Amino acid sequence: MSSATNKIAIFSTQPYDKIFFNKYNDFGYQLDFYETQLNPQTVILIENAAIVCVFVNDIVNEAVIKQLAERDVRIIALRCAGFNNVDLEAAKKYNLKVCRVPAYSPQAVAEHAMAMILTLNRKTHKAYNRVREQNFSLNGLLGFDLFGKTIGIIGTGNIGKAFAKIALGFGCKVLAYDIVTNSEMEKDGVEFVSLETIFKSSDIISLHCPLNEQTKHVINEKSIALMKDHVMIINTSRGGLIETACIIQGLKEGKIGYLGIDVYEQEEKLFFRDLSADIIQDDAIQRLMSFPNVLVTAHQAFFTNEALTQIALVTFNNIKSLLVQNDIENKGALLV
Image: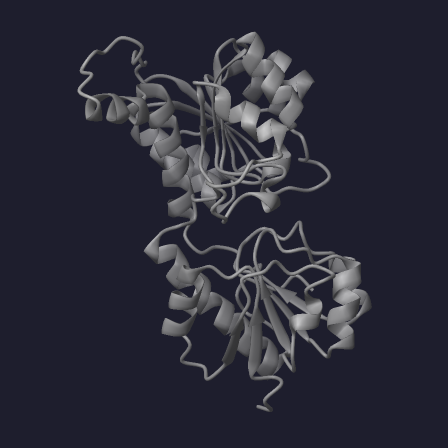
């Protein structure tokens, strides 16, 4: 390998990224870590790197891709499953390969979705704070039995499938919607239904689909109107699946009884940063956090030791395969 093909510029780097990528770098790559987001202004930081490694909130539009091509970058390696932030047509146009990590730990995200459901329902986060203040009252902490409730899953890829097994384990009735039905899930007891049925019949709706033109704002004014009163909505997938203004209105009116989000439409300006000393200018997220029945986590669902290990290993193997054979055998990893 030349020094150029041996160098990877890794953007949106957090301390844990450095730990896991350095730990599993048995490939001899030179790693340049940048804490900043990749965008049209930060492309100039790349020096003699043939590969850039990006995350969910990096901006990889045509303007960025054109500059990457001009700097002799050959590969855009996403260290995540979602790729809605990458202009794939532009990548084709400028002859850049794009790869991703299609499945790192579906269980990590599925388990976090269930954790959000249990927290919102049994209010353990509020109970924890109360008891620390020597308040042992149960008033205001009333929950419901999850057993026997109907959970609707939108999107039955690896994460949706893992979440369905967890929900079935709790004794829930599980409905699912996807473009293609899954016979294995049907054998387990999952019933595939229309999207409208999901909205009308579910006590809890959990989103596990990618963000694209068909799924953007799947939770909107019309779909919320179809839902049961006091429905619980959980989103551990992509922020753009929910139309924020509509979800706020649904919460204000009491139509939505609980909301758990690990992602947010404008999260690139907020998540993965410590803003505790700042005045947050995003009025929508401030409004959401003001509701007592809303739980927000900051894109944490993927964050397990097992997931970060797989992300590093699969990313390195994807890059090696592209450099050696210009292809990837890992199903779904090669996008362009």
